[in-house]
Image 1: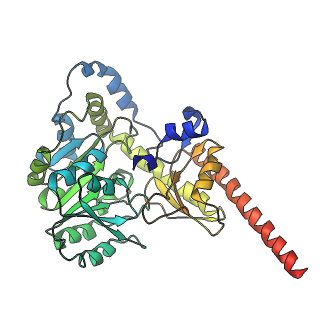
Image 2: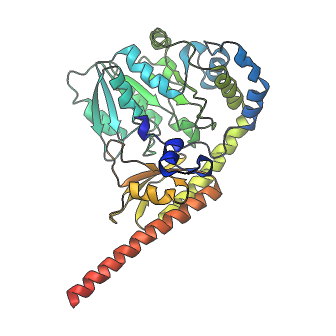
Image 3: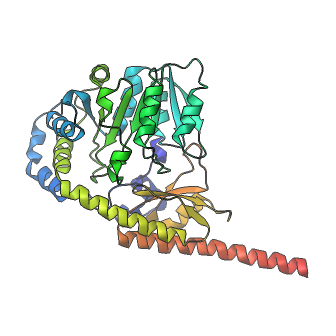
Length: 376
């Protein structure tokens, strides 16, 4: 699945013969401000710590996350990116079935399949949580299943309110509900949507978060999950030791403590996602979905051009977008772009407009030719 993941800059550059340093990567939704300066400073100052084994318990990191989420350190597991945790969950808890609402993050299905768990995929047209409620009632004989949900959803950006998720959890006590909140840090008014503070007190709710997207260091791999102690203890029986290295732990601690960076990021992304969305709306031939986080899903109109063709055209301008054709439920009429800096966003808008204007021009010429032929 990772072959279709965003952020594969090296593979793309090898394919096109380009320099990775010259690419503007809109395919991976990472903080446009980069990582906090305090992270660079902390890693530099403590670099010699790599001569020692890392803290296998991630004690300091668990402590600060526990303080932020108002729970106990015993409610938290730190992972080598959130992806490690997604694969850990079905392997350790062994649900009878895995349930996924599509389209969503592709690694959910891979995580189930990796543990030989049969997957039930619920296709959604409106990306509303009520679709899951309606379909779960029809899953006869699948009482003990695990449901992966992404909130906000990737790649659609759809947000589900907290009360709807809690209602789903309460209505399905025999089903484990896993909520991926990887992009929740980017969400304005996140308290209306996040259920991370509720997870420790519920018997069938697990919340997984990423630290690398918001804090701009995906190369280090760092994520965590929050759940009640009974679930945590089961998971720890199957979790490999030493998966979170010393540098990642140092970076995570420094980043979480930088409250000013978090405030600045939310303000910046809020302004830029509005700027980018407004610019995309003005381009003929595409329909951007209203953004809620730091990425925007875009549907292509009836021009006949594909997301692959648009991706290839933009690569000539050293711009990489996320082709969404490999998301279940989407196809070659969808692509996704990250919210980046103002300068980068302007370059994308300019290049994309030229591509779509060229398509529109060809359509018009073809129509003129047909009209002239018909009228004689």
